[in-house]
Image 1 (cartoon, rainbow, N blue to C red):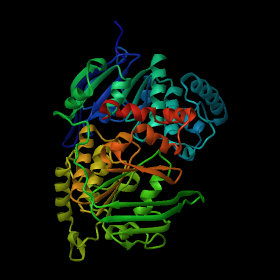
Image 2: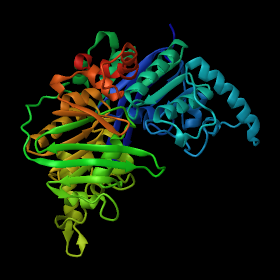
Image 3: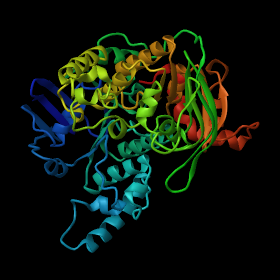
Image 4: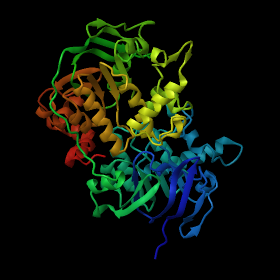
Length: 533
């Protein structure tokens, strides 16, 4: 019989009081895509970091292709034929693609021969695996999807035949995720073994051969993908039945909370990103902003949240807010009753080196409730953070732990808890469930709907079309800095929204439909059967 490409036997790993992995055993067969799923904090990334040599297991054995193997560091993992593409890429942004490819794998002191060799090999790999990319492009000028290709090419250049991908679609648009899956299929056809760490059930069902389920540091099941279902996997992950759709009553909108008139934003390169945006939002409703990433949604959130300057008019509860100068900042918005969950939690929502309890009050630390005389009431803040972590099921529930030591989904919960707990009149929320597991998705969606039902206004930005469709009471579609139109979810479908997202407002031609099919095929698949995790 063919030996497994990877066998982990009795792997255990603890970080202080937190038992991240408990006696885990798993076998991955060669030439397959093996999914590993679990809630945020289930121990998936820790297990793979042990396999890649980033961590050393407290107990257990690693076997590669039938041989017991010691992997004390990443160099040993690379020598064993293992490559890893991390959720947050390990690239030097001001280096070229080619320079990143050879970094750490140079043939000698002289770079020119290494670069020439890498350029030739890169052309071969790009052609063989459909990973075409400009070798002379700077990383900082590439889209997230193309940066991920560079990470895959780095692993292949180092002769990896076992690839680990940690939450690979967490930062991708639907179209980029679709392209990634085509690449993974091609790699599998060429005999590569792939371990896919994800929390998205649709991805598991679409692309894997086998799936292993982790819960709270333990391996609870391994099943063939063809013999299971999203509902069964969700129950194995969470330990209870999970609602894979949003359950909400019809909205009962009240008074207008937010008014935006002819809003324009120009970036620091002189490019106009918002081109006369006008919209309104009432208390007790959710306005979803749909669109392909890069069409102005991020800039809209930034200027509404006070992090970018603009021209036009913004009124909050009838009071005009400043758009330029010193007054255009986050504190002014918070004083007006606006809370903001940014799209990028690590760059804009948290200070990763600081503890969870410190992050729990960022932006609100001047609140008198958190003061004790001339000083901050650290003990009171710590108690409040503990309450938030318990209420929002942040794992592990240790407020003194640094933000960087939480999984991405639990980092998101810390940010969402901080903003929702302020009881805002308006919640701006960008990509609320990016990189979040199904249990946490269900919880975050419930919190958003509950806030709406309390009479609050929510402006939701998401590239997940099914999330927009299921959460929103109204949908505004953005394309190239414009709002192309508004729709009510019950009176539209993905095809119509797809046309608007492609900038098509007239009766579509056959070519128009072809554009929509190409750009939004993955979003349609996500909506079918409500299988999205």
